[in-house]
Length: 110
Length: 117
Image 1: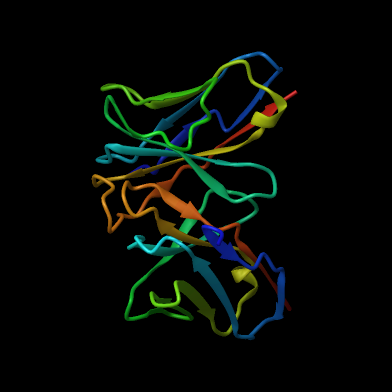
Image 2: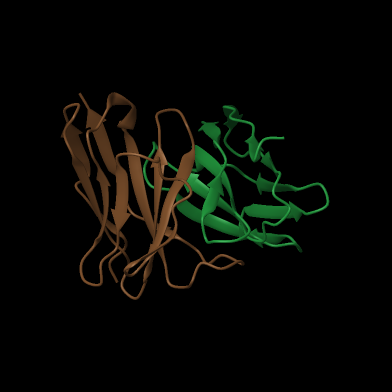
């Protein structure tokens, strides 16, 4: 099983749509999970951390399923400005290094 | 509070030359991480440093690559005798804590885009 698997997309959705991304990981020792956003191969920026209980930040909802080893990101009411690549990220389980997924590209169209 | 700073932003080298990439962490952060993003690929961890110490270099190529984070000054990623395959974006990140799980947020610099001719 790959260390991390993420559907590269692209996901092409109209404004206002709801879109969901999933990401699976293989390292059961990982304890910290994040979604980062990357625009046009600029630096990744933290979108949100992902907690076991699930967490929401405005239009964004993140979920963690430890049993099945996946995390998800739900974006409601998509905006044009949401167009970006969304990176699934988690820690390696020992040192602070982060493991990045290849990213899922989202294109929101008017 | 300035963010993570990296320079140069763009660097062009010919095969066989040396490349030096610099990273200044956010104020108050003493932990630095280097990642590389090859074209059309995700970010890959290279090395994790604290002041004057290399904590984890499991992602560093065995030859030609080295990193340091001296007591004073920025962290340096050094690539000797560059080859075309070294062309990539090199991102530096910093965090305030020892990097133990659960992992503290890492803040990324704008990256250095290295092009090897």
